[in-house]
Image (cartoon, rainbow, N blue to C red; front, side, top):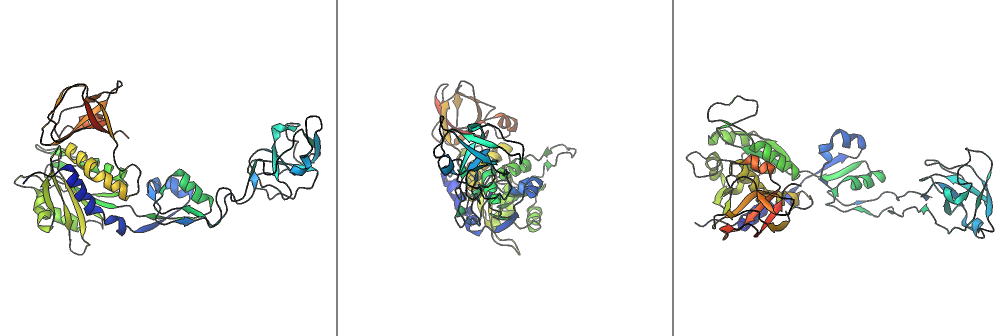
Length: 423
């Protein structure tokens, strides 16, 4: 049987996970600075679950845009350089003050954000008055103006940003600083947000051990749980990592049976054609299919859905176990669909093009992805070789170079397509 193309497998995975968009539950977060700073991960990259309308006007009252004098524009109608108008200074109005009505023939010192007093309809900046400074509070005095002012000058009108009952934010809005700020500015105390997609991540292998554990011959530290755990969180998911340090199918099934409720299972390793492939052995009989995709690294792939006792049917995506294969598989097949489902921006990597700095050979029957660095001169220099165990080279890379099926050689100076991965 011929290998699947990358696009065929991407489409299959996206179709498998599409129902998660409609089955997402909603949860409520308190909207307060104390909670946002105390529990930042709860608020990072959250998506609004429903459209919200404003319960108030923003701003809620006419207020001053400048430090200056609140005046009646009619009082300064005849003001000019040769015929200045002098007004009596009224009591000052600070931000947070209620203010008192402004009588004709008076000007009230007013601070930025303070309410425009009844009767006033304009603000003259302090530097355009004579004297160009405020008197000490409640000190009698006069102030002179040498130019007229139009009604509404330097006045932030009530509701000029948002009216009461206006659409505040639509459903699906990604909540960043400005969005959270405008919600808080309306006095809302709760945020209806989509619950993050919950992922059970199971890295498998009899050889893997947790960092800090002395290694015996043949054992390695578990990098895959960290690699994909972080990558999944960056894609907006909540992750439960439960490594399976065994090649026994019964052990993997026991981990699944004891796991918390999740929306998606991702496994790493145990999907090739070896004698003991734990993921194949455990999940194949439950309905997960295994394919070979024409890509390097990351050829062995699997997907499907399983039904565990007492649980809902759950989609499953399986990746090969070499760390570079696992991470590239995530980049190609899962990152775009998860970011799209979680409402995050830029779900798809942008394909750029630049000249390669060196000669390169690639298997013509596979879409090869090589790690590289974009140099200062704009060319792409490769990092490490094609092998899927070269994780250190991946960590140094800033781009993934694409060599499509049918390309067996690229010469130095030839253009290649690449993704930037250093964002």
